Amino acid sequence: MIENYPFGRPYDFHELLADGIVHGIGVVFALIGVTALIFYATVYSDYRDIAAAWIYGLGLVVSLGVSFTYNMLPHSRIKWVFRRLDHSAIFILIASTYTPFLIQGAEQWSILALLIGIWLTACLGIWLKFRYPGRYDKLAILLYLAMGWSGAFAMGPISEIIPEVTLLLIIIGGCIYSAGVIFHVWERLRFQNAIWHGFVVTAAAVHYSAVFTAISV
Image (cartoon, rainbow, N blue to C red; front, top):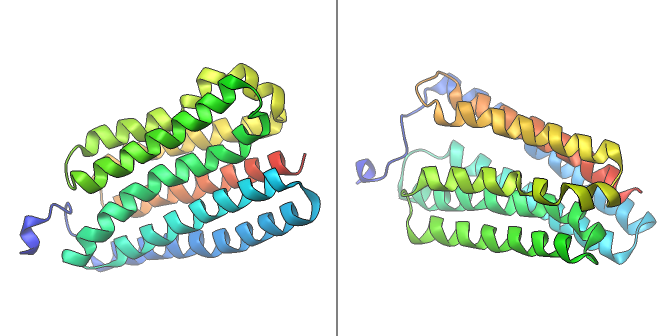
């Protein structure tokens, strides 16, 4: 029975419409942006940056696509399956976004350790979401934030391998994501989901710019 699945409060038509528009804009621009990024990396960069562009690009498009599908589905058993995919995709997005930056200095043990640690944490989070669906959501949010700001532990080495503008864009995007979490948990607010995803799309656009500046160096 549908009531056995804790989706949160149902959204009305106008809330779903707003959320769909936000997601649609994000998916379209992600597809265009990722295509341009991979093309640029293929023509002007080395194999390391090409691989990073593909990892980041797939992570971005898949996460936004899965999120769009999940949030547009009516409450059902299928939506419950997509809920696991949607929450897992956030871990993939964070890890794949870090990859183009950290791979620039993977020769340094501290940066390589951070890159491996982020992907291992992403795997742990995905296992948590599939093993215990609907549980430990607050823990998952803490893991999202911890992964997102884990770069602060290697800020010194990272700042030496990427341009200042790239580092600034990374921080700005992280702040936008973190601010959006307020609306992610504020479920009683009308249009809460659309606002949260607006923060996600905006932060993703900022981080896309950061990735482009890192690869184009």
